[in-house]
Image (cartoon, rainbow, N blue to C red; front, side):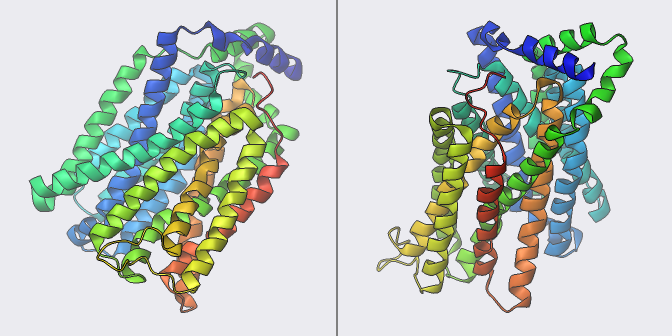
Length: 442
């Protein structure tokens, strides 16, 4: 009975993407992009203020890092909660609530009075953040037709908005430090929280996902009692669908590690191992993020042309080769210093570092591919769980473990970056366990 109802619901949802007006599609894309911008801004603004926060509360950087790691882990809970809300009550409500919760507790971060207060509000912020990405990707997927809708391109652009949030956080950091001195962190979290709350309220103007509405109507028609609807998640995850969750989670866990090993430790690597001044590190970081921001949508376009699995495999393989290039550049005594003051942009170590940014471009494909792997009725929940779990493992735990291993074996921090090779290899392996979806209608 359940399987037949699910088939009817999925069939009912096909083709509804073409029913959107251009204005409705623009609104969905705009607000979905905006949520990812706030995700990136929150990630970056906390990193920028880690040292000031440690000084203010009289704790170590490790203590502050624990807060960030906890917010990633608790994001799994947020992903499940808000994913279920989005699957049962609508994408619009789920996305509105997740951004509003993130905004409220980001604002409350500005009023933290001690370390444990900071810990609590940041953990609750993580609950909100954990629900955003999967719903946003589901929303965008369902607003665009499977064929000719350029879902891959839009998925890549959506992932690029994370970088836009980082750039915005950098600008806010500079402004607040200059304007407010030692209280800069309070003002920065206050501004970001207020903006996110406002963004949460304006989401009431977003149109609901037509695919979700069609699937809901089919389910209500096919199931005698609406009280049975909450049971469908456990039933839907039996068999092949549950196995897909496992493969997707493994693929993204390794994929995030391949990215976050570089993102987390490369600034410290450039300053300590290669002795670049802070201004040059900032320049190099900006060029690297722009490179990644361009690579994400290009990878999405490639997935629209050649297929999701083909493009993901290609990007992961490129990442593996980039890591090999980086390792030999690092151990071959390549230096980023030019003959004149400044960066030698053609040095092997700099070119390999920029090549790594292109290797991360599989992150521009994961949103559309994972969304297409699950039916409408559980899409937001499954995608949120996979994304938040993968980021907690690959973006939080694995890089920290890599640093511990490097330090305990007497290696420099550049090896904590190079260990990300494991992530690129794992991403390449596990993506092959998932089927192609770009030529299906879903």
